[in-house]
Length: 472
Image 1 (cartoon, rainbow, N blue to C red):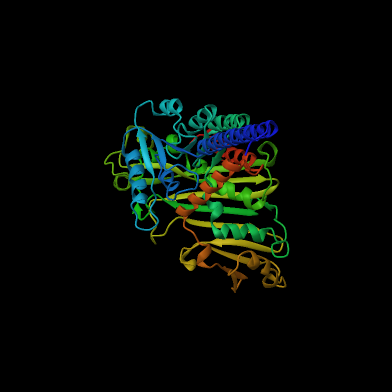
Image 2: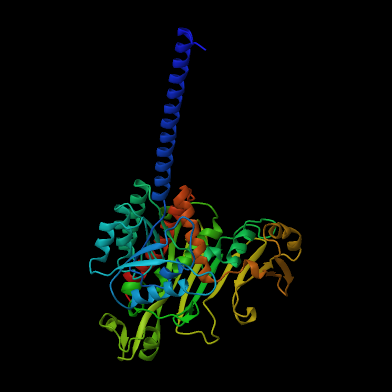
């Protein structure tokens, strides 16, 4: 059959159109592929890569006791060669090889004397994890932020007034460069502290927080620690410098950070504290814990006192460490007392012990952890007025924490907490790290966190400065 000129023209036009459509489709597919590749590359670049700097404290390893989504399994470690580093690597290896829920971290280690400078130069990751010798910690924090790295730091981030000034600068740099600086406050995840905070926000049970007086503070926090303790099933080996307050910090500037943090977190939930006007240090004191050379050797595996501890040695056989401290202060007019204590070893082979009290106008909320509680933290509600219907109002807590019950006592009520809510101290490090990672990913850290970190370290370092000014 013959094809006319018009038909040839129509056929040619449709063929040309189909060719154009095919080319457009190919180009469109290419564009989509490029966009997806870029997106995939961008997502890969967003993956968090940890850098562990100078891991002299076992808390550095506890951050890696679990794996985290979107965190690279390769961790770059920068430190000097020595026992501190080896103990850290051994702990990570132990987590990798445990039978239940093993981790799969890969540690890439640099051990030159210029380890900090090398870390800054190479930038093998984007989040610096700091838990070790505190002598240069605030400097490391500041310089890491100045070089574009986010920082997750173990407490304390500052141990004296000079370091507090560096810390203030560090937070300014973090804000300017849209970076995150966060400290590891594990005690916020202890269930008794959580419930103490929750109940204190219930006027039906607690009333309102009393103001108290210096002789009878409205808020009391006391923590007893032991140098000889178990971590991940083993007796922890302490580095010798841990007993030098110039490197570790005094107890009043170290463990005290947890107690001061809990005062702020429980008494003024979700509120920003302005340290320049909300806090007044009324008094502060410190005293020593004495260790024999034999005890020191048991803890450190070192058979003599280092040179830097000579200033603390008495009769050549005893070191006197200012590990204990007490701060009496007011925060927004509320009188608070925080006390930190260190002993060599628990006579009852317990873990660290804690006592806390909040005085309300209707009831007192008390956490005890003594022999009567089998050395487990236990929360009590002690009403001021017997007519207060605690049990009726407590249903609000039970709705939020199913399974929590009340048990009558001679002075009020004991809060019975199911095991499902109880986690050990070591597990709390994973909780804090997950919070940090969420803040890092979503940029949604609560606005009160930074001013309250500043308020916390102002309180501890100001108290230390007052003691130091009066001489030892």
